[in-house]
Length: 77
Image 1 (cartoon, rainbow, N blue to C red):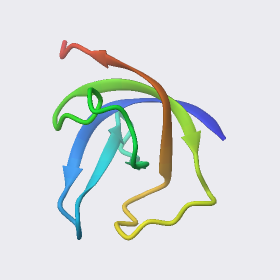
Image 2 (cartoon, helix red, strand yellow; image 1 turned 90 degrees about the vertical axis):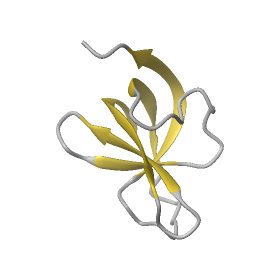
Image 3 (spheres, helix red, strand yellow; image 1 turned 135 degrees about the vertical axis):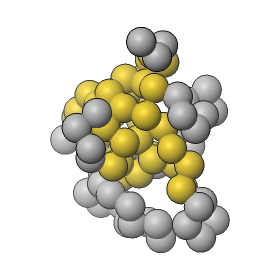
């Protein structure tokens, strides 16, 4: 399922660590490994386009796994 989500990037210290996107409406997505390092900055606001991967399981299990296809860093307004 392809989606566009706007929210804040967070680093979760579970096991070896995981990156999350917490949407403006409170849903937490786990960012699939391999995402662009320019996106992976804690506290950064971004608009992310991607695909929810229902065929992937992770150790962190913090929410649906989001495979990032593209993103736009947003300024805090």
